[in-house]
Image (cartoon, rainbow over all chains, first blue to last red; front, side, top):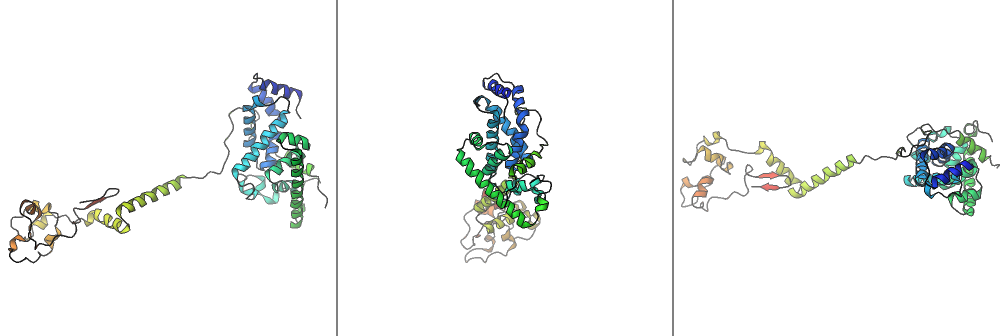
Length: 191
Length: 164
């Protein structure tokens, strides 16, 4: 996930010889990945942008504590997932209200239910923790062990969360089929 | 039921997301504030302050009826202040001056007919004005005391109460 130069950069950051320029390399390398991971969890574009910047701010402040043995990508993704889940926790509405009620000011793609893709609907049916595991597994391509190391949870927990997430996504797919609009929802999506 | 390729679905979905305002370069400390749902507490605070003020005023004044009474007494249209024209009316006391009538606390007594004199008192002693009463001996027992202060001398202010 991360090249040797990035590890060297992080080692330099941790050793106190860092500059803003060195951290910028990390930012440019990971900002899109982090943004899309956060976007998949919080499901709102502007909020994901804010949280992406907050993630890198936290990483910049905690760069001295970062272990040089770990991958910078895993480290950044851990901060991103924790930042996203903390944000949704702060909202206190993630599990109580429909997603569209706390996803920004109306510019979100998820405000228009008819235009949501099957993947968006499936992700919206998950809890934030399940969403994080699904995004890391299916989007970042992490294995269960990598997810476990990234989120600092047991591999068994990752497996159970992935199983629960798949079950929820299957139910969301079945409900979509029952609504009789699969063609509209799956437009342009490869199966 | 066959599962779709969730990996491909989610990858294509998330890859389609492009940040609009995310800066291309990292600038420490330039993070924007979250657009958390804002609640404007100022109208609520003002409403609570007004209600508390009204409650305090009602408590001091002794109830809604007393508030109404205080307001009507403070109102200048209800103040019956003797004017020089009143002193020009015939009075049974020939020594009453116009200035004394102005300082009299009971001008309503001038408009009302004098109380019936008690036995043994001369009619000229009955309607004595207040300055004369303060200087001389106490009025005869036959003169009925006023049950309450006249409206013109009672001043009620919020948070202080009524002062005679």
